[in-house]
Image 1 (cartoon, helix red, strand yellow):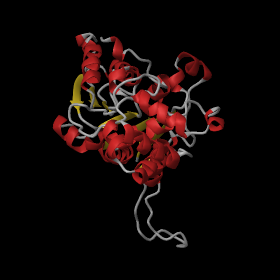
Image 2 (cartoon, rainbow, N blue to C red; image 1 turned 45 degrees about the vertical axis):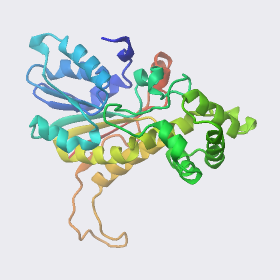
Image 3 (cartoon, rainbow, N blue to C red; image 1 turned 180 degrees about the vertical axis):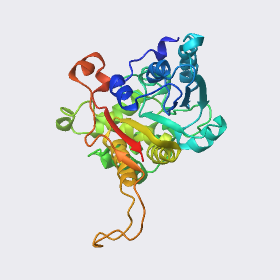
Image 4 (tube, rainbow, N blue to C red; image 1 turned 30 degrees about the horizontal axis):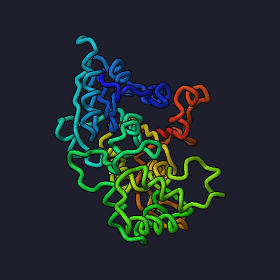
Length: 318
C-alpha cells in the first residue's frame, strides 16, 4: 500500500464495539479512506458478510482495495468499493443491489493522507496549490476559485458560517485587497493573508490562526454540511431494523448536524409543543445510544494527536 494512506483509524475499538458486526451482516463504510476501520470490520464479517466502502478519492479506493484484498480468501467478505460521495448514497447502494444494511460508519472530515499531500492544498502547515477538492476527478470548484472570485461579503459569510471565525469580515477584506495585487494561488499565500488580518494579540491563543479559514473554505468547496445531512438521512432510510449508525465528527458544525439528524429520528412527533398528547401518530425511527459523545482516551490522543477533536455518536434503527 502507498505510504500516503498509512494512517491510524480514530476510535477504532469504540466503533467496533458499538457496531457489533456479525457474520452475514452488511456493513457500509461511508468514508472508506484507506480502510483503517473497514479492515477490522471485514475480519468480523467473514466470507458470508458484505462490506461496502464509499469514497470520492481514487487514491483512497486504490489503497483500500489493496489492504482488503490482502485478506485470505476464506476470511474475506463480499467487497464492493464505490467511487462517489455519501451524499449520493441512495444511488450508490442501489447499484450494489443490497436490500439494506446492518451497520454504517461515517468518519468525517479530511483524512491524514489528504492533509499530508501538499498538492491537495488542504493543510495550512504545508505550502501547496489551493485545491481542497475531495474528488479532483469530477469536482470543478477549487479553493483558489473561491478565494479569488467570491466577493468580500460572500467570503465573510462562508468563513463565519463554516468556522465561527471571529475575524471573518476582516479576513475577507484582506483577501480581496491582496488579490488585487496578485492572485492567491497557494496555501502559503492564504496563510500569510490570514495572519496579517488577525491582530497579533488574537493569534497568541487558539491554535494556528489560519485553521478556521482553511476549514471554512474546504467546507464550501466540497459542500460538506449539505452533503452530510443528505448522507445521514439516507443512511437512516437504508438501515435495517436494529441496524447501527456510528458517526465520528471533528468540529462543532458537523457534530451539530449529527445531533440534529439523530434527534429528529428519535422524536418524529410534529404536534405543537402545547398539545397534551401526540395527535400526528408519527413514531420514532431511531434510538440514540450515546447520550453524550464518545471521545478518545488520553492514550489514543498521545498516539494520534489528530484524534483530539473526535466525537463519536451512535444510534440504532427501531
